[in-house]
Image 1 (cartoon, rainbow, N blue to C red):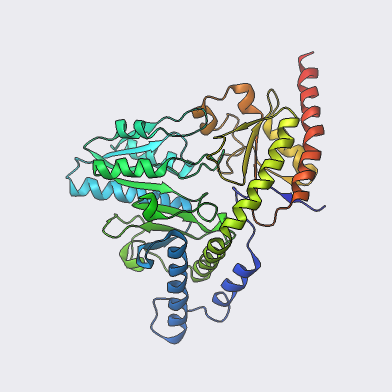
Image 2: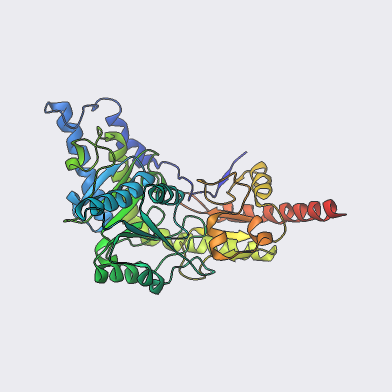
Length: 387
């Protein structure tokens, strides 16, 4: 069976060019980049070349890029690292952190743990489109605020946040601002200087690089407490660098930078085509109507089980998800849908289609063709169960 893969927000296939870039560092150029011999220096050159490529995608300086293992680690380093540093520098006075209600599970679990350790956590609500009101962020900031974190684009419904306005408020109030750009980097123009971010997280496997590699932009002058201790990455993140993964991330960033505008046009057209088909079958599209990732289509069908719909689609060769891959399998609707105020009947019947590199109009048309009978069958099953 030929599969239509429409789950790119969960992970992406590795592009051939990216795989070709990383293979030499798994085979012949296997040196430790901190060794002074020739093999080590080959590896070091690859790391620094990739650092420049990542920086170029974000309009940052190479020395502002810290390599990590993934987007989640980057989020933790940014938020916990900034909060811990502020707490130490202020003798415990600055212990307040502000996040939105729709952040990634890594941030949610991190801040829950921080609260248990004595940090003050404020959670800013969102509206029915999952969008944060900058005025709510302004109201949440205190003199004791160490860092504010609001994701650039939501991984579930795709809503893009007003990052520029929020970053400007944070600068005005003298607090650091972090944005989780894992879903937006490579899909939107993520210019950290224009956005005003002090810290920004990205992940390789969301932009056609392998799993196990990520990066954190750290603006010059911003000091963080290390989470993984060691001398690597200028003492900001310990551990021997994943050279093959780093090289792959660099190449993926280079490709994303060159192809982004064309990619956005193509994905936007495919998403519109897909949403038209979903609406024809009685679905409702969730997220902001215009400020949304070009490849994300989150749709709900009232009164059915979204997980059952995902399974039905999978049996016919279409890969989608019932929400974020980081919370899949949960019996309850996601925290994002709850924060948006979606009713139980609509939230339970949600499915996320996320498009990316390699998807075609044929993939979309096939999905729409399969979707209608699958939804109808599930609706009949619900009716019969009530008889």
